[in-house]
Each structure stands twice: as C-alpha cells, then as structure tokens.
Length: 385
Image 1 (tube, rainbow, N blue to C red):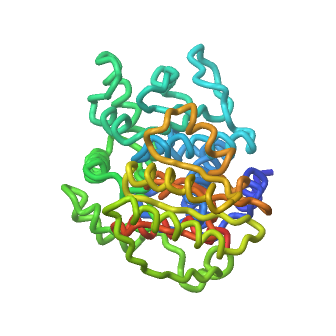
Image 2 (cartoon, helix red, strand yellow):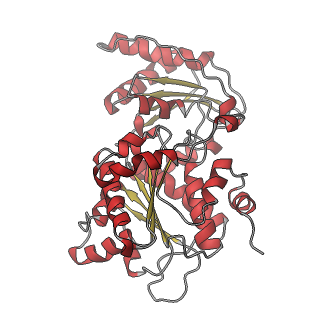
Image 3 (cartoon, rainbow, N blue to C red):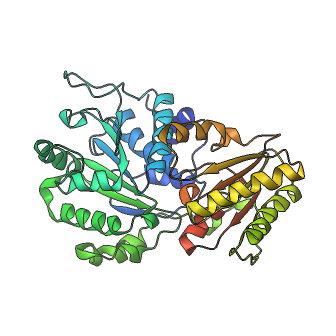
C-alpha cells in the first residue's frame, strides 16, 4: 500500500513535513513555478522530497526522470549534496552510481557537476533517474550546448539530457546574476517547444522577487508565475522559527586603522559574553563582506580573546579555504548537530554562510549589505525558534 506523502516524508527525514512541502508535493505533475519560503523552512528537502516521492516512490512517469539542482556557489553545492544523499539514503532510494551496463536502476544516483570534481558518466544513462547537482556555470553551459570542462563530443548528449525530461530547481537566485536570466530564457524556449516534453523549472529563494525573472520571452508569464507563487500564508506563520523575536541594533564602527579593528573585535567579544546559551549553545556569528575583513577580524579576535582569557572556540569561514578543509566544517560547526548544549563558539564568516548553512546563532553581528543578503544572514540567527 502506497503511503501518503506526509507519512513517507516523515519516515525518510525524521521530521513532519511543513504544509508548504505538502502543497508542493500535491501537484499531479510539476509546473514551472516560483517558491518563496523563509530561511530555515526546509527548501532543499521540500523540492527533493516532492520529486523523490512521485518519481521514485510512486513511479509516476509524469514527473521528470532527472532532478537538476542548480546553485550559485561551490560551498552550497557541497552542502546540498550532503542533504540530498542523506535524505535519499534514509528513504532507501539512493543508487550507488550510474549503471552504464544497463538494467533497471534502483533509486536515483546523485552526481556532482562542479569544477575540480570527477564526475561519473551520467550522460551515458539517460534512461535512469538521477539527481544532478552543480554550480550554475557548469549546468547552464551544458544546457546551452557549450559545456564548460566537458569534451566537445559530449555536448549534444548533455544538452539533450538537460533540456528534456528534467525538473530544474534554481536555488538562491538572489546570488545568480546573469545566470538567472539565462535560466528564465531557457525555460521559455522549452515551454515554446512541445516536443521537449515534461521539463519544468522551480526558482526559489527566501527573498525572491518575480520582477527578477522578467527577461526575454518569459516576461509575459511573470505575472501568472507571481500569482501562483508558493508562499507560506500569514495564518501559518506561527511556531518554530516564526516564534523567535529578533531585536536589531545599528552600531557605527570605523575601520580605517588597527585601533578601530580592535574596537570591532571587542564589540564581537562583548556581544558573545553578554549572550545566554540555551538548548542550541551559545554561538555568535560575525559576517563580513570581504575575505580580507574576515581574516583581519578573526586574527584580532584571537589576540583579544587570549588577552581577556576567553574560552570561546574561534572559527573562520570563507571561500578561499581548500576543499579538504571545507569538508570538515559541517561536522565540526556548520550543522544543526554542532549547535548543542554547552557549545561556546564565535564564527567569523563571509557571505558563504548566507545560504545552505543550518546553524542557529544566539547573536548575529553583520556588516551592512544589500537587503537580500541581510535577510539571508538574519536567517542564521534564532533559526530554530
């Protein structure tokens, strides 16, 4: 007997699904749409769960064979891959890899398409379900028949596989730049070509604005997409992360000299010491706009924390770390499991923590940034309610 989505999802994830996740999985077949859901509400699990439930669990062929998760940054790909593998593995639907010898595939293989990562020959198995995760440059170039870091003879195969029988999920679109308009025009081409078959695109972000997609031939459909945008209605905005009150304060700290850098570091230390730890520990997150600022602040914090006798654990996160170092971050301090009773930690980071990082900071200190970035950073504070 086939389980309902909510029962199946809870068994696979360990969490009861949010109403918006049930609504997404309630579609008979996927339609091109916008998803605007606040941070911390399980966007990745929602889209992967909806696809896996229909295509893998129910075997519904009206849902596309391939799920294409497109992300703007490498660190997001690495984090999303972990979530997808854990979810499909718990559901018993994770295939070992591409079955190039033929025969029925059990579950879906997960393939990472990103610079510097060896990729399995997923293009040789167009008949098998698969989850393709990658950065926007790698995936969109292949959808344009000009695959970066791909042999020219492979371009037509990847082009065909990524424009037919696919569900594209374009995540964190506020960080995509010109890739967003490219994804919009590609979907407009697919919609105009009936021979393409079942291929849809879901654009999602906590700060999504429909006007961002008003490009090319998709411009005429933007109003309809906005009207059907999946949002969390006001009557459902209660409990969990909606129950936390976040007070804000604006502080001016000049940064023109080492003396001012010392004041900046001291403000982070003071805020950390004044905060109160709870069930998720005491975590202060300081977000800088540049790598240079983050490195300088972390260095100054080390000096002043040692002088003050602080026992807080200091961590530095930015995009220039090597993959071997980034791989250890999730288990060490960038996951829900790493936020527990007794944790006493200060994390200095750049915008790499704006998306795809499931931590709940007690206190957030951030440099001013564009509004979309600020909203994402706010989502790392009191994330669990």
